[in-house]
Length: 139
Image 1 (cartoon, rainbow, N blue to C red):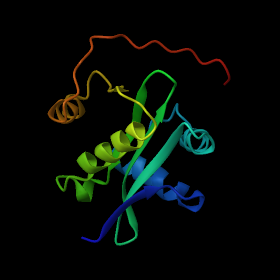
Image 2 (image 1 turned 180 degrees about the vertical axis):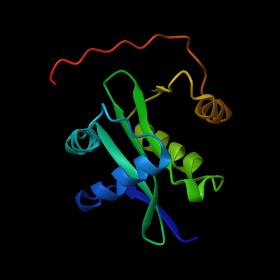
Image 3 (image 1 turned 90 degrees about the horizontal axis):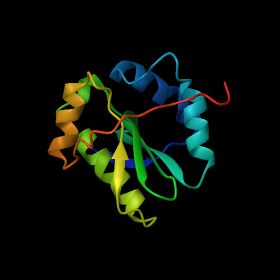
Image 4 (image 1 turned 60 degrees about the horizontal axis):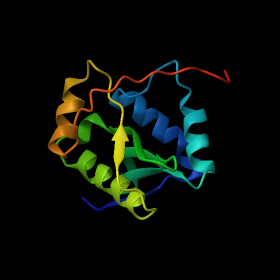
């Protein structure tokens, strides 16, 4: 496998949205294009893609808010699971955040997603027993 992890290019947005749908991270109440555009226009965030022979098979969005680093939209195409794509993308996100002075990373996992919780725990993440609240301020 000839692979590379690099920032998303603007013309690759559709491929990433398709990946998110295939991987099961897409949610209809979150506009994926809005999320991508927001991440890509700000120097405090990025969207990294994992390419195998030029085809996007994984992605991770990460950013920092001046206090902590955050990881979002970690996705691996179902045909490529078990090949350490998610692990390599998580490491790439952590490296991107470290290069910007971030010392602690946080992420959100849906409470019913035991598989994702287990994956992140194997990478050293811990459940902080926090509650996430949200409010839409600009629909």
